[in-house]
Length: 183
Image (tube, rainbow, N blue to C red; front, side, top):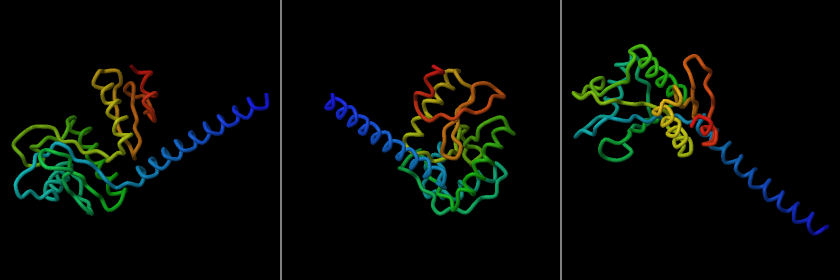
């Protein structure tokens, strides 16, 4: 009997240690995302001798936003790949993201390449730079939106949220299991 209690205690200690480690990693990921000052711009084709700062400034002008100072702006890789924008502060990033969101609400459309000075009408997206786990979670939520299971899926200050119906409060999504109720 005593040996069985010892094994049970050992198992509980191991479970507790695993849970503590998982919570620690999640909290670290959430802390980093809350203070990150990065955004990702998707949909801009690569041009010879391009000035990404000029493209970004043109987009800011299109949404009536003062172009904030940025530490860096660069392509993740060549081609029509994501452009990483490293803002000086999270405040600048959040203010810029808000201006882009307000544009979508006001104009009832997404930004398109014409807004950036190109001839095409392909969409352009600017969003927070998320950790891999939250990016996958957001993608799963966006798939639910695409399949008309939910109204909205979005990231705000490094966290993923969904809205079921117009006028509903946003629901924070932390794991894939949180989305299973909407399948």
